[in-house]
Image (tube, rainbow, N blue to C red; front, top):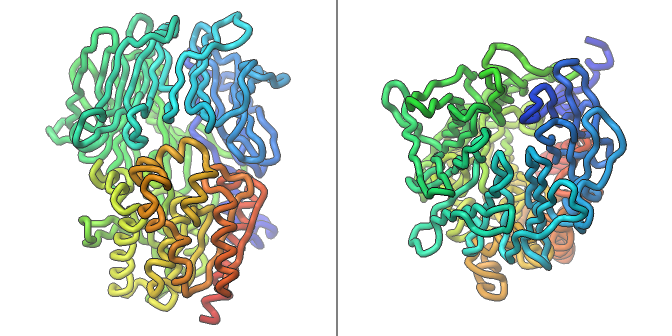
Length: 604
């Protein structure tokens, strides 16, 4: 190891180390793959010719690129071109082997992305979302000059999948007005007419969600793999929209046990088996499910988190795996590492401990990491975003940085998190924000009572929804926290609704049961701005100037009120969207947070 690298702190090495996404391969050209990497210091799209083992950077933009897809024949790389991270743009494409970019679908104005489907015959379906039009889907046939609109609705929706012959299109939609529980419609691409509909929301006292997982990838097979919540958790089933036949999939191990967590699946390329992913209590595992005999076979993956997997034509499965202690790698069930990032492997970190705490809504699961030495420790409560997401036993540079500086890290999978059943996730609709803080508060009390956390040095921190909960928590629980670090937060919920992208407006209407005009008291009760006068501790806020999810103006409103109150705070504004894809910018933001905490804890 060079002396230069020895001078770089381990926490910075983790941020700077090259990382790779799971390679996506072309359906009819499996030697052609696509992945995202930060090898040059910015996350960009790369084309990988497996046969020649050559890699080529496809995109090169100052703010980075992550959204991309391969045409089924592997001839074209499609990528989404927005402006400075604002997520508002158009699809472009370039030849897999390299060449100039071109507008992929002429005639479509910029919009937020609502999906993309590329057919084997050259058919293209592009989904758009705007405030003015809601969701629109546009079909472009081979040889046509411009696309035609085949779907429109004011509520948010998106593309599910195209059938193998491109005759059928599956649409995930929320026309019933519940953005947390989608329905599925299958239409003919020839004229947009409906072939079949699955709706587990309309007319039901307890709405259940549905999600498209993909059509069977073989000719003449119209079966659609669907995820459903009919038994209170996500499970897969088969549905043939042409006949209406639904096929349950009894996923049981050889010992007869069911999988207790949320279950998703995807087709093997021959459509004879499914690759099953099981998420439960912050970890995941993979299985093969043979459709002919119903045999469920566990695949050999280490304990930790699989953040993506794909079944290859040769029967192997490639997956992206990591744990809190070990950095990610693209592995294969053949026992090999499929793809290594260039450069050295980043330093590892501290394993997580599982903690269960009794909360007002049931047992709360928390992931705890302890630094070296004896407690009680200064402790960072790192709150996840989403909100329908969860913290997992996976590698993350941010928590590892705090551990290197002597802080314990606690991550809470509060009510609203995924992986613990539908009832746990759907509790989000009860007293938005406040119910999550009850669970965080219960884990905080445990952390102090157990001797892990120093009650005089407790930092509430998070990004996006986690940033929202941070600002809300500092006002609702003012005596519980020593400092707050809010990254791209919702700060003034009423103003945020007016400025945010339509997909989030739809989710917010679902969470609150109406618009700010229809149920104003619910919105005020859950807005951090309502409680800003109660904040007692210094606050650090970072915000993206082009963020469509947590827009800048509502953050400025909160900051202005802090200034009027004379409350200690610092604000960092950066020229990007909902987070940065530039490595040095991420390091800068982490350094600013560490510096803020060091200065204010030293004087508190």
